[in-house]
Length: 236
Image 1 (cartoon, rainbow, N blue to C red):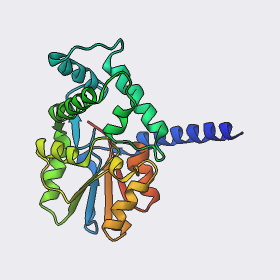
Image 2: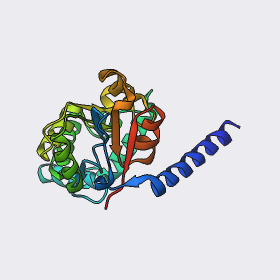
Image 3: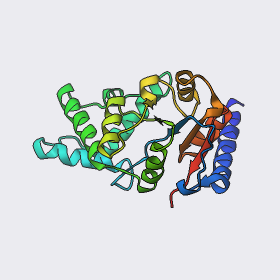
Image 4: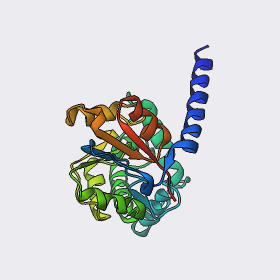
């Protein structure tokens, strides 16, 4: 019975997401932020920042490639496979489902600590290298900087806040109030708890906040459920 209930919830959530994407997605140029808003929260990946690779997992191929320049790859599996499995394990064993990069590497077997540290450093560097500002976001970001608004970034991500800030600044996104990264707070957008931190820091005035992102559930449905205005970003 619990399994059936879970399946029903999953199915309902999937249907809601499809409907939301179909009817609520907007381009940045279509978004109108009212004068009552004092804070704009942006999702990061695929909203403000993009990667030069087609899929996030493609980063792992680049990590292995760079690692092999100075080190011998002595494992039978590709790093892409190993890294993906390790993240799933780390999330399964996490009480909140949120993990940091170090937590993920803990679940990689057959590598010693020095090797893991080298790979962590390479993955962090690769993420910085492949990141670039979304040109569509750049337009709205520059417009908002001329208005009396605070800007924050809110992301479900395993990279450290320090790394995320470095990525934002590297891409030219240098002016913002704060960054909220799920792994630092053990709270996510998809369960709504990360938005609680945003609300607490900015006085809890839901009606004065707008959140913008590309995920139908975590960036649109959930903030709306908390009284926060939200826009679902749809790429051109």
